[in-house]
Image (cartoon, rainbow over all chains, first blue to last red; front, side, top):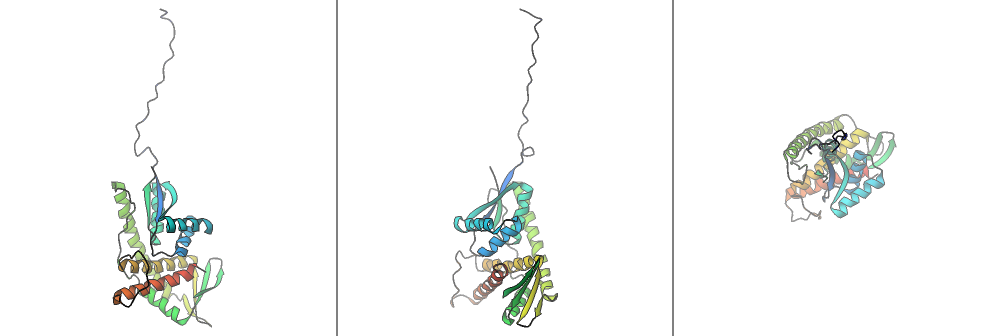
Length: 100
Length: 151
């Protein structure tokens, strides 16, 4: 056996364990249907809060109306929370749900 | 109520005497209902979610107090003035949003007071007097909302 032969060292990369701090969790901001908010009002609120044009805002409003809910955006916790506060200030039924 | 002029960030609406009186009455009586706690998520509550929900409800309660102040300002600051054909309501973009939020707060509050009915059926003479009153206020708030954003 040739004891002089050089052996390349093996690099072992240890994976860090996953934790909440390392993962950037995202959330869906969802608007739910209710029978009280006017369609024209919901469209207006979507345009105001998200800066959407009327066409996009109406598309989401119709989703809420016909499918009982619409996923408005997917964001990190802080921004999702901000949007829920904004939507709730206008008395829309909005929640943030983990996107997993 | 109709939009008569929009220039930049300013909206001007014309209201007849009845509309002006009803709007003033609506704004004077805010809020009609107490705070109703809201959920921030439909998923199972974790500690972060509970904390977020607490913050949301505190923030909403503060926001309602602010709306009440703003409602008074909208009346006393001479936003609603007599004109040639009726009353003129001049609003900045921010004031328009505040007025919308106030009106919808009234509308949703009345709906909650009615027990959050799934269908918005026409009220009948069989309804109790308070229920009829809530229904009328809800319709009235909706009327003004529709004219504010629907024009």
